[in-house]
Length: 266
Image 1 (cartoon, one colour):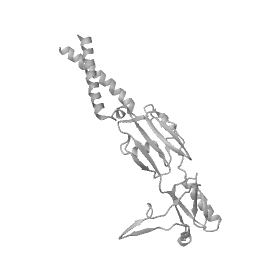
Image 2 (tube, one colour):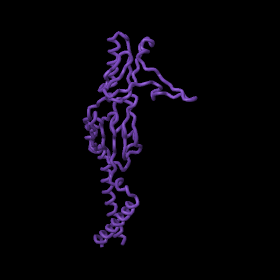
Image 3 (cartoon, rainbow, N blue to C red):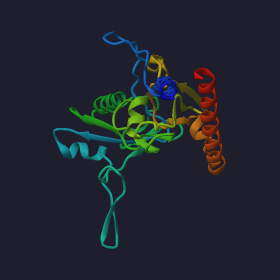
Image 4 (tube, one colour):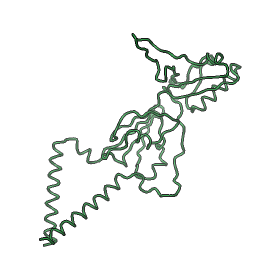
């Protein structure tokens, strides 16, 4: 009897070991990434201006009075005894890019900014100010005011992720959302991207090194990242029914293993 129980224990241990190995392959990131060697990465692209983006453009020079006409005012609205800022960036008003990709800049008039990076827009405004003889030594600072990415599905903290620099990767966005839950499919991460009036979707496998060469590795403003649920989470849509199924399943497995052990070791 003792020998039988020992053999049964070894059988269970072997099954658990196989199960653990199989589980780790499902959840580990970039499993086939070689150590101490270079890995190709999708060419980094800076975020470019799109319609409906909000921009902060600040012009400074040696003489603050000369640059003042080229800056939007700070605006505060008094509501009762509270002072409420009209914009999120300390009351600085921003330029909203219209559907044609233009902004209306003080004195310079309409500027086409769609498709430009922050640096390119800064250079454009500076060159126009100098060539028009309006300022000799302008310093132009451009910042995005409303860039975000939506992260949905099986992550710890779904919601909007704010972009605070010129580029952000898929891994960075997922980490800001608290990483995938144990129920998230590492090979089922979908990135939905706007391309004008069209939508493009990419499916990314976080377990594979090909992640770094995916067009979705570097995200863009307004991207939607969706993490698919695995089979366990999907099977929990009807809780009571699935609980009964789970209990029945484990009872069946236990019964099968006991029967198998008796046949093998008797």
